[in-house]
Structure formats: structure tokens, C-alpha cells
Image 1 (tube, rainbow over the protein chains, first blue to last red):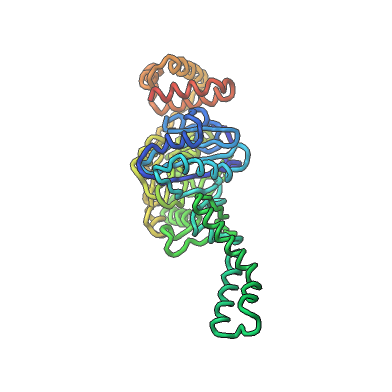
Image 2 (tube, each protein chain N blue to C red):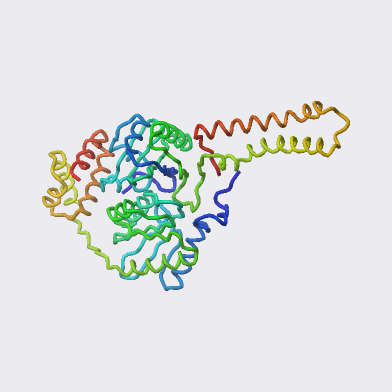
Length: 203
Length: 220
């Protein structure tokens, strides 16, 4: 008795720690949709029918792109299952996290788990993380960061020990400036993403 | 690019092993203890992590989850669905079990009880002890007696009538207790009827789903 084939299901699990308060109310505000009991049936997640039958669904809602539901009300943690109806589950997770973070500002929400899974795998297909440590794991960020750092370091050491005698100091720094500018831009983006609580995907 | 399927947990990781390693350790330990455990069998549309079979006893369908922090309700829901599907395929009772490295909480335990899932938390244990503890609990659960019953050919008709009664009673605001009494069924059976009703409505009258589901939620 199921609406789906398990092997075709991809879904995301989200856990958000928060201060005590009405997290479900904030979720309603975030999605702009009230609880719709039948929305959960549009999710391809294994067990939605059983949850609906036991009356344990606290919130479910669906729009044209995704279905989200929650069935466990922990005192200081909101747990969600998100599945996409049009293929982009990462985008769905980011949208929901971004709007919940904004709606639940008073509850100081903190993303502790965002994983995309399929039921047959023993490891997540992708993990969403926030913060500096997550961005530091990105190859593109590391590639942008190190050239500038190494260039600045080499020029500084060269000036200190005195082996950069030929060209003027300004010329040396000018020659190294492209790498340094790229690094500064990367650091700027890192700060911006961190302030906005943007999700970095690993995997 | 980080490869999550082969990524080794770091030394300071609260769960210093991968999910597959735990699953393999549990299977190995189960075989040592004489339990017939099949790892990731393909059954119909699904592939549960583990199935433990015993002659004349209910089988166990098991999901193993490597989680940090609190156990997510999704694992409970997933293994419940596997149990129901396996029951439908095999005709016999199946006990769903969730083994998780996450921390349990009162709310999660209450949900597990409601869904009829046995929850085994191996939080804070190393790989060897987690496998041992899991198999110890599985052996206990495998000893439980089932409540298998024969399904007569007339039951299909009886179920169809019961579903109609359930639908009418919900429409008239009857409580689940009243409906159970009216139909002379246990709460578990009533839930199964309700799920059948939802499946039927989704196929035939999807616009009625919300009203019926709201009525069901109100009668809790």
C-alpha cells in the first residue's frame, strides 16, 4: 500500500535547533501556507501514509516545487522532511531554510542537519552546511583563497629578508595584486554568505 | 568535491565509523549469534538495511542510521513503511526496528511507540559495542510472538464495508474510539482501514482528502 516506488525517492532531512518557542508557527509564516493535512500525501517519502494515519503530522504543506512536513515536535529542535516535486531538492531546502531563518529570528535558529538521501544509500548524497568551516571545504573557495595568501606571504618575506632588491616595492605588490584581489573577493563572499546563512553543499 | 560515501569520519567525530561499517558489523554479529540476517535484500520496490527471519516467528525489518544529535523522525517513518509493505507482500506480521547512533528523546520514543517501531539507540558506543548491543536487542525482539491471523476471502468485502462506515463516521464527527467500537476493531486495525481509505480517496476523490484527514485529526 504505497503511492511510490522507494528506489526512485530522493528527499532531504532537515534539523534546526532553536530556542523554546512556536517553531511550527514560524514555519507556517516562512512558507506562507497553513497546515494542509493532505499535502503530506504528495510527498514521495516512505512512510507518509503511516504518519498521516497515526495523526502525528504537525505540519505539512506543498507548493508547485516542493512538499515539506514535520512529525516530531521536540522542545528545541524542528525536524523536517522535504521532497521536491520538480527535481531540485537542494533549491527547496535552501528556500525553506532561508525563509524559516528569517521568520524565526526570535528563536535563534541554527541549522544542524541538512542531508539529501535516497532510501537505498548508506551515506547522504549531499550535505548542506552553513558557516565558515563549510565554505572552507569547497575546492573553488580554496583555489581562490591560497594564491593571494601565498603571494602576499612571499612578497612580505622577500621584503623582510631583503632579496627583493631589483624592482620597487610598489611594482612587486602591483605584480602580485591580481592574486591578492581574487583572495580578497573570495573572503568578501565568504563573509557575505556567512552573514546570510547561505547553505554550502558538500558531495 | 567531498565524496560523502567514502569519507572517513574524523577522529573527533562523535560517531567514528560509517553507516555501512555499522551495518556490516551488526550482520556479522547477528550471524555469530545464530540469527538469520540478510543485509540489504531487494524485496519488491524496496531495499531495507537488514531483515532477520526466524522460523515460526515474526520477521524483523531493520533500518540502521548513522546520525549525530537527536534521532530524526524520518527513520521511524521509513522503517514503518517498509514493515507495512513487507506485511502486505508476505502476509505475516513484521516488526520494524530502527537502530540509530543518534540520541533518543521523549518525543521520538513516543512517536516510535505510536508507529509501532522498536527503537534501539547505540548512542556513544564504539563500533564493536554498538553491534553487540544492536544484536542483543534484535535477539530479544525476535523472541516476541506474532499475532498472525488468517485472511479469509470474505474479508475483502468486509473491509470495503468497514471503510465506508469509517468514512461516514468521520464525516459525522465521531471519535476514533466510537468508530473502533462501532466496527469492533482495535486501534491498529482502524489505522490500517484509514490508510486504505486514504489510498482509495487519492485514486478516486483527491479533493475529499483534506476534509477526511482534518476529520481524522480532530478525532484524535
